[in-house]
Amino acid sequence: MEVDFIFKIVAIGIIVAALNMVLNRSGREEQAMLTTLAGVIVVLMMLIPQISELFSTVKSLFDL
Image 1 (cartoon, helix red, strand yellow):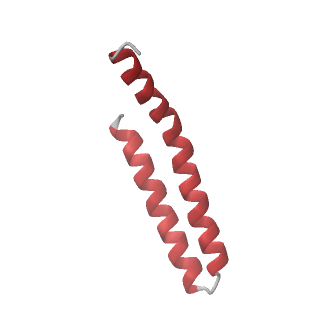
Image 2 (cartoon, one colour):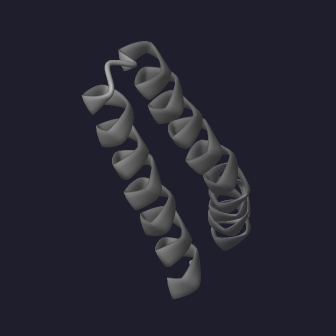
């Protein structure tokens, strides 16, 4: 896993947190929740290929 990948995840987290705060302060709690959920889904979609690569590496390492 590269450092820039971690920075991308951190950037998404900061943006989602800021949007969540702004939406909560303006009384739009439902949209804030949906924004948070969308951020989690985006990060999970970014992590799925990395997890697949990890399993492939472990599989080849132990000759499974």
